[in-house]
Image 1 (tube, rainbow, N blue to C red):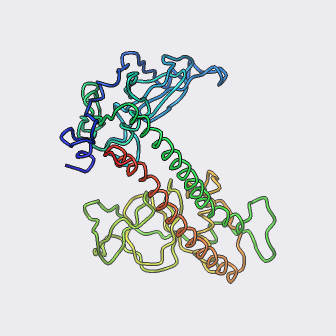
Image 2 (image 1 turned 135 degrees about the vertical axis):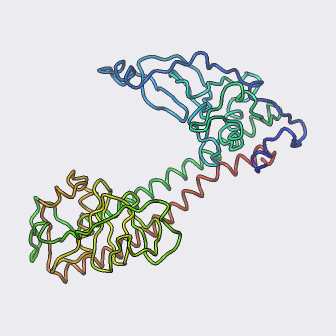
Length: 385
């Protein structure tokens, strides 16, 4: 039995004056009033109407659109019925709505009884990994109403519910602020590569720095034309002499020792897959793990890492041709002298490495912040506040 299952097990002894109750004993289910409306119908209904005349349309995990009418107009708790984050220790399965709104059939609609604290019940449902043991369905987990009504709630006296809810409201507000700040910092860090690349590469309509020239893409690169074979997943190993580079992942996804799996010896090489997000620079022997990978070598006078960063900025700028090698062949590359290419590439390598370190640190910080609500709620419902 997991820690969360133990925490919400009705066999666990509660603090004095607390009692175990079931969700159905403290909330009314208003599910019969829900009305699902498909995307096409909603789009038809809201077409040409002002945003002020529309109402939020909610699903399992929050608002999923707008609609031109409402079926609820009071504070309610929505609990995921299917498609929720069941089993998660960081993402909620319940949230609050208020005012005029519409709810589809993917969320249970709960109205807490007047003799319990509304926000206490919300917090008791927000993060409940133990509910995963209650859902059914092999492809899309579903928490039906009959089962949902039996979710256990540790219930203290009403004054204590209000006290705990007030503390949780404040703590969760602080967590939300910290999360928003961390997310903003992470987005800023993710934008840095674009900033650095824009500083280096002129746009087609901009004048070139002295000594630079526009060179046709097909003159700066050479395509490595070799027979390739898509490796089966069963051929991937956890270790081996040659890394496997996959088109979709754009990273090393496995290893092989089989030289017959199209091995490319070390040479200045750029992997560019049609319909992929970005090129990858490779300077080690490797195997191809998927179809659709284009292999480019840099010709004399062109640094392969400079070429790689040019391809990367092409995608970041969202120019449509970045996704298709056949169209790229008709484009031109702004090239400085080779020593300047190498200097620029080395500088970008250093900056991108710094960005990667910053991004990893911020992602770790965000993960730690995201884990805080679970810690806070565990403490609250064990009587520790």
